[in-house]
Image 1: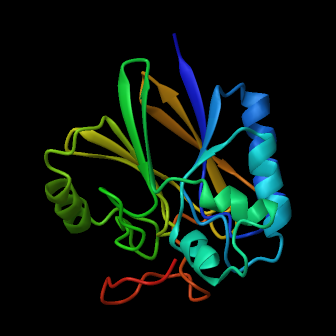
Image 2 (image 1 turned 135 degrees about the horizontal axis):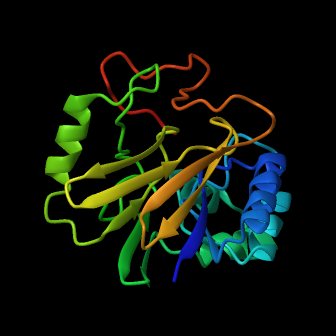
Length: 215
């Protein structure tokens, strides 16, 4: 038996690419949809975005922008968007076809900001970064780790764990489908645009020092 999981992340309150991703998932016959956080931030279509996620029965977690939205909300819980965010967990653990999957926005166990960055400005894997994260994830007890936050697109084995970042639907123009138990990941382009494996705040490159940014 094969289970197909559609994955999106870093939607940033922009409805059109999310709508397209969900349409792709329907066409591809996925069994469920996951969102690795940052539903809010930057765009101005948060209500439409939340409605799409709810209609698709997407299982979502909080990202840093979602936490900030709740912190800034007046009378939190008084509208559909705030109610939706207030009910989201910071992590999600699933067992699918004998595969243990863990989802967190940036990195385990529950970081919103310490993102897993494996790629350079050209979208190529940096061996030193891959080794560093393989060491940091040593002993991590899940077969698949789904993350977002860094606006990088990859599916890389780090030790015993397949780490998947579908990229941002808004900025990378990507979504992904994960096939289990085969642990195969396919990336799909969105918005009739060339997918960007790495996207970083207008300069389209990673910080020169490899430092963090508020994705």
